[in-house]
Image 1 (cartoon, rainbow, N blue to C red):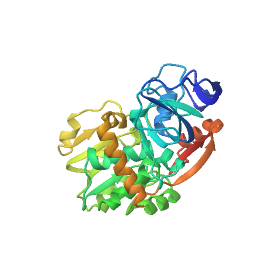
Image 2 (spheres, rainbow, N blue to C red; image 1 turned 60 degrees about the vertical axis):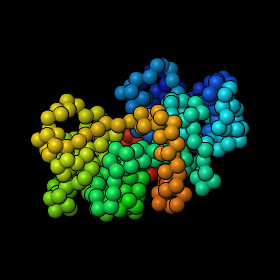
Image 3 (cartoon, rainbow, N blue to C red; image 1 turned 45 degrees about the vertical axis):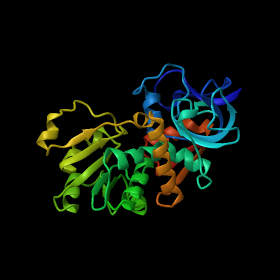
Length: 323
């Protein structure tokens, strides 16, 4: 028996229950890992609240890192003792879990368990946003909402390294300092400033090539007013709630804009693409281009507290649970 957080009904952080669970032997094509660190993401909130449906009861969590302790039939790419990280199916908030081998990634010696637990889902999200959804290049101007957060901190660092001018929206002066440390050239306090007007001022009316929006309801449709004609709106999260009643005609009215609502797991579905994405991410981390700031460590039993901090927007950088 191992400890895990289970959800028997959707709702607030109080629905998390620390329980003893049995973990079966890994099935064909699976590996079993003892987790050393578990990533905490807004994706976990979506599942906990029922915004993303899952069969009850379930163990939340889609990101983590640890050691391979057992191998299922047919698995040849891993061996017992390998250090791995993953962004994958539910089941992360547990001391031990089974995982499809196809979604796991071997960790390089330059990447710690905690870094991996903070970068797999968030870092791979940043990879597809910056290198696939819109290929950021030197001279671009990009707007990153929640620039001091998990994904935002990586987008700022990597975007700057690619030669873009990064504008970041944040909720406080403290977060503004962090966002600038991460690479944002300009920061906007969205709670006290007209952030759309500030973007227009900063860009001298030229606006942004792409807006990366993980906030959702509170930043829509304002994000569209920050994008140059033929630019891209990439909505990858809903921290403030989902965007409702999207009128596609607005894209034409605001300059023939492109808009997308991508998900990481669509991009990871192709094993070859997943491997390429992971190598790209590991390289920028190993080279020091992207640093993974672990700003909060809590015990697995403190998952409720982790979600309270997350939803209160009281987190910066990466928050991890340690079994």
